[in-house]
Image (cartoon, rainbow, N blue to C red):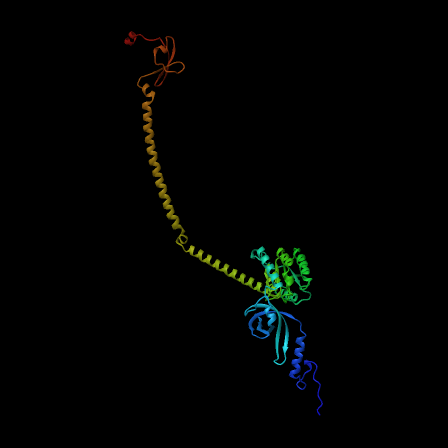
Length: 420
């Protein structure tokens, strides 16, 4: 009789000569799966089959990855759900994995199904999100621009985490002179909110920190809950230093992402966003310098051509021609001005002579030249009646060529006037 050979106790010890039977592999997989605890799983229902049996069968699919599971649930528990799951519903399922050895398939046994956003946790987050949205904490006008080249970067991350390494390594590759003020804190669990908040306050109070990165390497919805805490979100919104949220997740969106000045998809993305690439900046600077030189050279060449074109003009080729033409115009203007002035002077002379003749004709001297005289009193007042100069009165007689002094003999009688 052939002696039985003991089977390898672990999968790593199996060989081609000492393999496991299919039944043993099935048993070990079933035992391993049975040790798994109840888990909450999120996905999309792509098939819901309600028959007359005791079980309801569904298919739960990951909308981002090509993965799906068959889900079974007791019809009695299914009927007691607060919602009626339908095809296309986004749900979270409380279930336990089970392995069917006969078919070699893995299936989920469901105990509870909740619509995403209606569950207690998700519902509270949604309510808080709407409240903060109404307050304007997510508005674009509150987003502060990131500095072009930060002197010092504040980094809040887990202790000895891959996120810390990703940020620092990628940042130093892009700009070796960059400095970090790193604060390693708990990024999940009951201490996370307090430690992250304290680190944020401390870094925000420093004048040398230009930007703060809050980083974590992704995680489940429960792991990311601290980054949706209301006190932490409000603290980030009130910070004076620009904040970059680099939680490193794709499906769930912590509220910190919405209030941060920039949301990075991964810690590496945060480093590339905050720190410029030195080699790229140098290349762009060289290109800008080259374009500036080319533009300046082209401008100088255009100005030279313009000057050469101006020099070729007749006025510059034979400048005396332009001067002669202007000289002729000036001579003509001078001659015209002299003629005009001469005519105006002659007319003025004639006018003056006419006025002089008129003045002489009207002058009392012209009358005196004809033999007349003006008799004036000693005060120069002209006398017009004999009574104004009684006998013995001194008078002055104005002639055409001088004056005579005389003494009045009084009024002459009519007889005397006739004799004279």
